[in-house]
Structure formats: C-alpha cells, structure tokens
Length: 297
Image 1: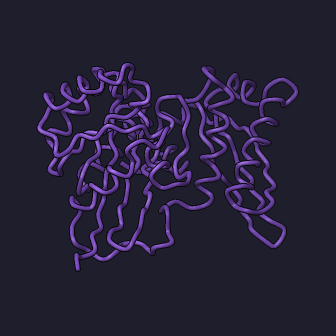
Image 2: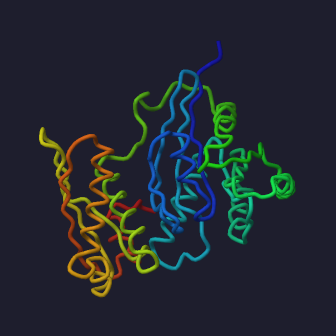
C-alpha cells in the first residue's frame, strides 16, 4: 500500500492568467474571488484538497508584477515570493496563447527556486486551430527544463484530472496537515469581505478596483441567520462618491449582489450593511495595510 502524501503547491504567475479560476475549478467550490481585473487576488489563500491517498494544499497567490510602486503592490509581490520558498512543487500558470515580459520576469524567479516547476498552459479553449497548441508546448519546453508541461482550460475544466493525478508524486510522504473536511485556511469573515470586494470590482469597471478594500467589522451568526457589517475603505473623497453612486445606487446594487452570493455560500439568511469610509493613502502605508488584514512583510 502506498504512503499518504501531503504538501504545498504554490500557484504562481503574472496577474490575470487564471490562477484563482484554476484553484476554484479543482476544488469544485469558490475559494478565491475571480474578476477579469489584474491583481484581484491580494492575499495568500490556502485551498485544501483531500482524498484517501493525498492532501494537496494549493497556495493561491497574488500575481507577480513589475509595477510595485505602492506598499500594497510590494507586499503582494513578497507574499507570492514567500509562497515559492515554502512550496514542495510550483505550478507556473501562463496563457497558452500569449507570452509577455511579465511571464519572463516570473520565470527568472522560478529558475532560482528549489522546488520542481510544472508549467501549466491555461486557456487552451482559446487556441485555434488546435494544431497551434503543439507550437505553444514546444516554445514552453524550450524556455526551461520543466518537471512537467500540462495544457489545461481552468474555465472549461479541460485536463484538470491529469493535473491532479500528477501532483502527488511531487509531495512528500506525510499524514494530512489539515482535517479532511477543511477546504481553506481563511475565515468566513475574510470570505465575506472578499465577496463584497469582488462585486465592487465587477460593478466599478475601470474606475476604482485598486483604490478600495473591504473590512468586516461585525459578523454575528444566530438562529435567524448571519449579520455582517462591513466598511469599504477608499483613498479619497471623490472615490467615496463613485462607490456610493447616484442616490446610493451603486452601493445598493453591490450590497444586493453580495448578499445573494453570501446567502448561497452560507446556506442561511444574510443581513448585510455596508459603509464607505475614506482612509487617505491606505494602499501605500504598511501599518494601515496590516490593520486592514494584509499580510506582514
């Protein structure tokens, strides 16, 4: 009988290649929020996948990016870099149809990593004609001596079984680190804040996704359901007006959309109250960032 295996799988790549979509797909549930905006993921989030033979602990990370002007961006880059140091195996996620200078930057970092690196070519559903996929695989093989190269579509769930079957061989023999019924290391308060931030990001399009964050100040569960009070922090008064919207319209839509998803996620009634407050330049102040729940350096 083979020994049980358990270890950390760091999911690394430039922003917007589908890292969180991949993790949600293999988990069969929403662990990380997803939008089309780069840098939607700002935190290190563990997603725990358990079966009889292995416990695969995915580490969802912020996208590694060049422009790290603000403290939040530098903190996100450090969070991703720290995940590399702890990993037993690294999934380097790229787009099958596109290679950028940011991908080059990430690969340079990965060449210094001690863990084996598996190249994951995502979004193969967008490759037309299909013969072009062979070219993409060949180009990837020429860039580095990867432990494996696997083409997938996280969105369409193509080839995920092959990916999951391959990962345990890279993990050490070990009993599970987490209970089998645990799916993530993050609290319900954290997930509530992230759902609200996702709805804001989707609603506000280009205006403001990077200038806001969400903090849950009160989370009470009782026999009537869950009551959540959350603050949406912005950096300037002008941004507050955008988030609230004309006659409070934007904030109402965000609240309704978030409440519907949270009700489905928590399987109970949800009473959600949102406030918008200004904290000047919070995204460039490490003390403010840590107070708002961002990881310390």
